[in-house]
Image (cartoon, rainbow, N blue to C red; front, side, top):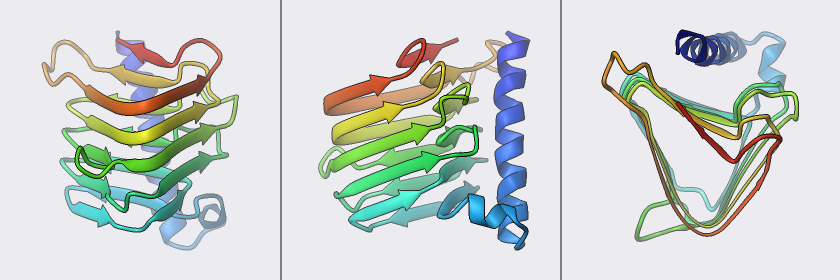
Length: 171
């Protein structure tokens, strides 16, 4: 169990470090265009068409995509497309206003496509959800000792997954 949690933490820390460095203007900024992240805050993105490289919600933050159009996440850096941890929430659409389409794509070398851990929640409300790349697809995990769990709610009409091992992996 510790190795799974260690992998998830390593990926999350790497993404957070890349984001901090990217925001400060280093060469990584070009690799992480449209980097959406929240650390203890609330963000609502009400655009009809969103293109992102990575989405990270941490430390109780809430990131909501409520425009109703399309959200496309494509991370070409062998890292997850989205991460929700430490009791944070990522909302892709709402129950009353689904997205037309949510697409999450990573390189085939990525271990996971998305991570939900340590009390994190991901809500997917879309007419169509497509994910591609990675070995494990969505990775939902937690250390049983913390008792926080992790939650993913999927409310979609069409679900398409092209991953090496599985669409959703739980631990």
